[in-house]
Image (tube, rainbow, N blue to C red; front, side, top):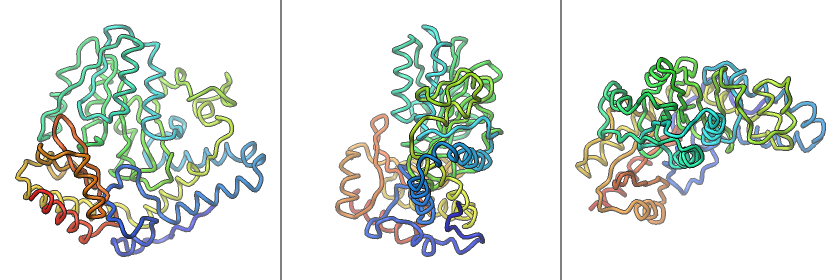
Length: 391
């Protein structure tokens, strides 16, 4: 099914892109990083697949769905840079991390270690906490020095906590609260050389930064398509290196669970479900290509850099990371006497600005996501609001 995306590159400034999204025009939306935002053409493709399903549910689900899912997976795998046979759809990146963790349970023993940073996404921390409670494995949480200076310094700081008991290293590609981009390729290379399993939470990477999973070479990589890739909600993927695939279990055994089934069949044939959102993923990829998304990212980075600089001049606090280590999303530390939830609420209720404020290690952070539909007006509105609030 062909969607409505253009086949040639058109203007991709904020004024031309904003009408292509369904966002409420009365809200200054600076929180693309939480759940993304779907272009109209991608959303219409999603709905058209739902209508196609309802016209003949039996034929669609029993005859057509497997082939359509395979085609959508092939387009996704090509975009994120991994073999299609090693990639399956999941609801989101966290679900992918959960599946990876569950597959490794039989390999873990009491006093084994899982090493991660103190900047990891809370639900993923919860997954590893459950693994620890079930197996006795020890969680080693590495405090990361802030401000972040260089990738080499990070690698040495992280790897200093790895021991002969370390069985898994878990790392965000881009962190949720602080928007730090970690050198996952370097960590995965060290892990492979040491015989340690590497699991990467890539929720914020696809569509946000150039992604080549084969080059990173992790054992597991979970990503979300509904964030920066612009796909409908509930679309994610899990890459699994071939040696681990035989031990993988889907969310539940269903029609795909048979001895002759390959890795993708076991995970994709999950009984009755609506695959429409997943089938719209290729349309999201086509949309980004049509509008030259590399240039959109570059323009968004410059705007994020301006916002970050202006608010830092208001606070006088040090920046978290060099400009080269974030793309369209940045986190800005705020004074410790401010309450994160209160600032977020005031930003929305008083200024109609949607932007998250989270606390980490006692410090509130304002996280700003700049997408192609944002412009100088949005940036200036946030800067003026923070100037009033900080005063």
